[in-house]
Length: 189
Image (cartoon, rainbow, N blue to C red; front, side, top):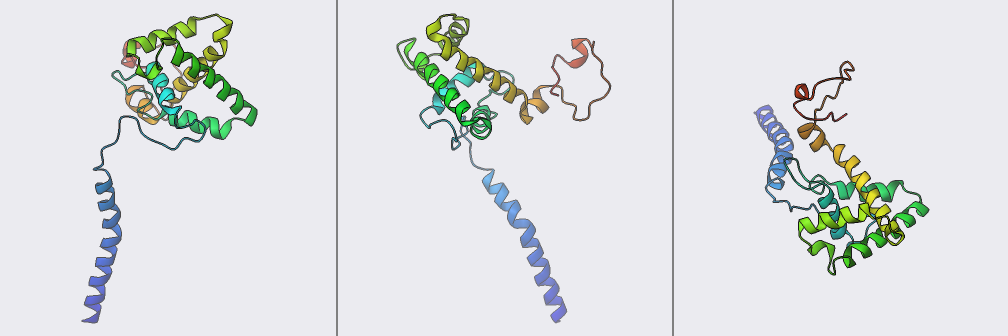
């Protein structure tokens, strides 16, 4: 009789070990997530994050693929700058970003975040096309953010696997393939 009780207790203990994480995972998946995932910034200030999100969301908005903000590009950008840049590079990036912030918040007489999407796009295009010395620092900051955002966006797992041709183990090199054979998608790798 003792053996039977021991087996029952052992079975219940094993079941509890396997069921507890499953139930915890199911309950935590019931939470609704915000449109812009929140995170604790490492490099940018909390006041700068809305502007960074707005700029990156304007550069790569949501279409049939998710926006850059939805796949975590601002978090990646913040983490990379914080972890990989030398102190003098961080200082230069911060100075350029502050120039961009000043330009974006004064060019239309109101905050960049409060502009309509079309106005945001126009402001960014005008800055990129600008060749004035007074906007050079802001322009360089925008181009740097744009280049890094595109690179981080295309390297996210969600975009690479769901919106680009993804082949983790590549086959033979075929340089001239008609776009029709690729379903109109670029390669992820």
